[in-house]
Image: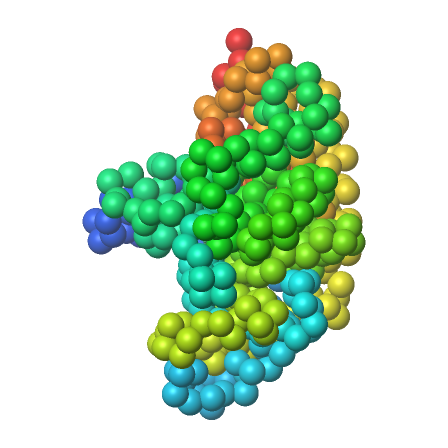
Length: 456
Ligand SMILES: Cc1ncc(COP(=O)(O)O)c(C=O)c1O
């Protein structure tokens, strides 16, 4: 069965003939920005952490739809739940006709999402970007203020507003003009903090910079919200230190600013807790709004925005919602997916996988000097590559070669980071121990081969 299988390349080289033919059709039929394949992989079927391509090659997928597949591919109970819903009806628009799945999913999330407040409310959108955009709308409606603080390294999506919030400008070349009122502060990237700083000194440095923004960019009284990824994803798998989060919470409270946690990539057991913000909650900090997407629906598009009722009810009728938001098939999937996270305790499994991966990565770091940093929470781990450990000069070419070498051996890994020099670990949490061991063996072989190719 594919679910328990190990990686295997049967065509010698990837892509095999059938995948190659589809990739050629893709290049002709799709815009160049999407048509040119980085990964020469065309899926025939997926189960658990594995996918089989059109030519029968089997890949271990450590990208998992970029964080969508914490539950893995084609979980039978989820497939069943979606089929059962499909037999009844595919669609209603919640602004017109109420369906129970929407209400039940909102109730479920209200009971588990660690936002501040007793009475909570949730509504749905279709993508992570839409969730973030909605969170900003809600924050503006509640505070009656217009400005927003986002952070260096942030990724919040590709709508016009979220392109403006996203730090890396490669994601928005030629796409302006962008909305005004967006101000960027520095995210606490400890590995690249000023040389010689302790963590405490670095946190003070980043908080001072945040204060500077009130003097030089926008007075605090005009700021509606700050949007923060508790563990930056695209930015390079960088966890925000709890002491920094605490200081930011204090600044928000003192100035009537709402704190939004973007858990689009970090949510749903990925970090070893249901939400990365659960780590904040343990330290007595709670965001005002949490956005989520990706592993909420387990592959059926749905995203959510959750906050206390007082904030949510500030948006006037007509200002939020949309045709497909909270689609019945997506809600049926999400309800079953969350049930499985809880029943099978996938947060603990994420911790266990994370411990094993970290231990192996630390061993690798002793042998391969290109590994500059290993960081993360639970099963969300990044490895940063540098040309020189002293200068920390990024080594993106090494990461690109690792990705190419791994594909040819049946392992899918992806880059991250402002400089593209981080490899992210986002494997489905249902991966077997044998698959994890096989993946780590391929990873090390790729380190060896890539070192030979690129390091003289
Ligand atoms: C933290 C974060 N926010 C928002 C988004 C945007 O989500 P989507 O691609 O579903 O619009 C992403 C996507 O990677 C993300 O990682």
